[in-house]
Length: 217
Image 1 (spheres, rainbow, N blue to C red):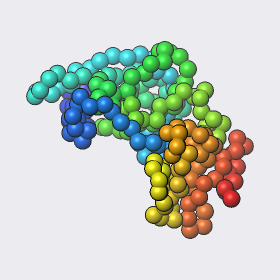
Image 2: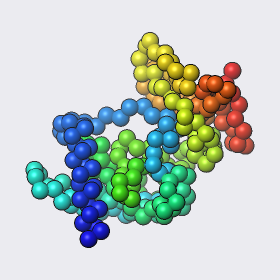
Image 3: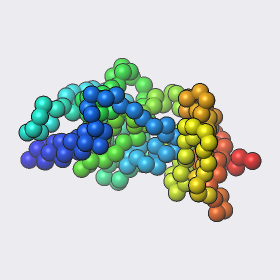
Image 4: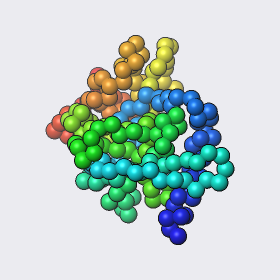
């Protein structure tokens, strides 16, 4: 009974996702998102290993049959999440890449990954736009951000500047500019900095491996 109810809710969520994204044959497109933004917007942020994968049918009575991909996940660390979600065993994602379904291309039972997901009736949902990164590829500053610092800046907004001109519209925003010309959003602002409150505004601060932050002058 609980399983039927869960898949019914997941089916409704999946249909809503299809509605919001429009044409299911179109490619998925993800906007730039700073690790701090991913952390703050997520319902749950965890570290662990992908250990298995299966496909689950969605109970949808109209249209073509739809599937949900379910990844088995062994959680070793919870950075953010409800108290009742300290052990996450499964991650769900749409089976269709066109609606931003996530495909884990690294080997199962390989290295640890950090995953930022959303909760749907106590199930963790991820997409190809979710923050999912190998632990080994995170900088020391990003690891510090996950465990200590990003949560302090969740009342701030990081604004990606994707084209010129761009400007802040609030004193609680930080302008993220490193990808304007290159289109690569994985430079020093993403790897070494956080947008944190200071007095009556938000400003970029450098993160140090020792856990201290230094305002950017």
